[in-house]
Amino acid sequence: MATKKEMKQFVTFPFSLYKNHKYWVPPIIQDEIDSFNPKKNPVFDTSDAQFFVAIKAGEIVGRIVAIINWFEVEKQQIKKVRFGWFDIVDDIEVSRALIAKVKEIGVKNKLNYIEGPVGFNNLDKTGVLIDGFDHIGTMITWYNHPYYQKHLEQLGFVKEKEYLENKFKFKNVDAVYFDRVSKIIKKRFELTALDFTKTKDLLPYVDEMFEVFEKSYSKLSSFVPISKAQITFFKKKYISFINPEYIKFVLDKEQKLVAFAIVMPSFSKALQKAKGKLFPFGLFHLLRAKKHSKEVIFYLIGVAPSYQNKGVHAIIFDQYTKTFAPLGIESCIRTPELEDNEAIKKLWEKFDPTTHKKRRTYRKNI
Image (cartoon, rainbow, N blue to C red):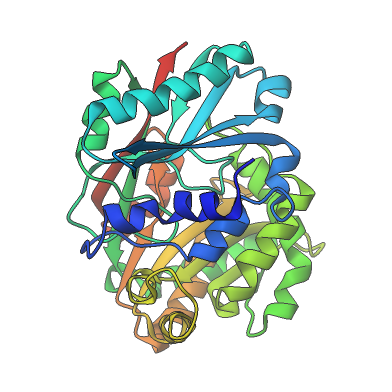
């Protein structure tokens, strides 16, 4: 078990690796430490994690987390050990030593292969950046130097999954089109759009939102379920800090939630200014970004299977055009999406998106 000092050293290592880096976005240090605390994060109810650092000449030169998601291993029969929070100096021997620790854990638990970088589940960051190093990161993705990919491939890892990150200008969204189509879809399927101005009003719908999330994402090859306790943790950590007007729901005639979307302001520049600390000035930068950022990130979007391919997403986009236009939103970024997810590609094609980043998870048999 790591001490408080050791965990802080683990979390802060990238701050030295990426010091003054133009595109790296630091986490809030205490928030990251808390997320690794089994007493605070319920993800540890179904997962185990071991934290390792590599030390050379008395200095930390690398880190890694080895993760076993027991639901994935036992219920889904996917016999893999995950690794994440992988950061290294440009020394292949450092990477070799850290990966060896992950392999040891896999062997000990009779697992078949290693995959990473990934987190504990679908709500965590995923993938090593392989293209788009000259674009600023986001608070929900990892940034890394180009040599990470070379190290993994040199150590015998092969591509497992590839993710694309896209962005588009808000002006590309045809507000007139979505207003017209939204009205048609609402009438045809007797649907209602929900908008919010207060967080307390949307919280009662969050559990139901995750039911839709699970049903709409369960077919993806990367999916593992999210527990009730993890949903509660997510509510506390994220929902309360996201602008309520950036969360949209669609209900059917029985008032059952059938679609949702969560968008958040870009906090990237604010987090760079905060330098890992909320106080004395970090919180000010974050609150300012929450109110004034002209860039937004589409974090999650889901439609219940029974309503997919029926144009329901038009209702959500219509809601956003009406919310974002008065705020002067200029650009939209999408979170990493699997390259073979054809449904999501069709969802966004009207906005003329450009792929500005690519990332991968890598696999190696044990």
